[in-house]
Image (cartoon, rainbow, N blue to C red; front, side, top):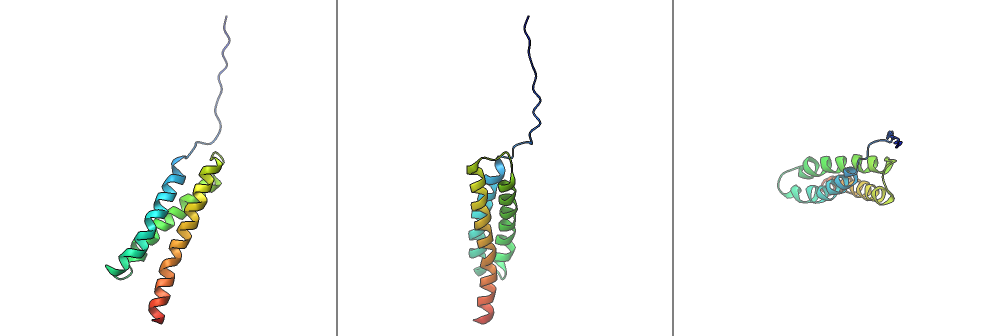
Length: 100
């Protein structure tokens, strides 16, 4: 006679793709914020800012994920930091164009 026990997993589902996607979006937002200014006016705002915002949101979600490992949390932190830096680029660009 064998006895088997069944376990029910009640932990939240893992979102392992969020830190990777956040870092990818943050990295893509950097050239998306710098390069399009020569192509058309407000190009960095149209292309780079939405990518950076998505990278920031996903990076912050990855940092708060209780199922994430330390490495994944650090990846989320790096994505959020890069996204904030990219969000400051259009602000500096606009101020420089107004003053210059």
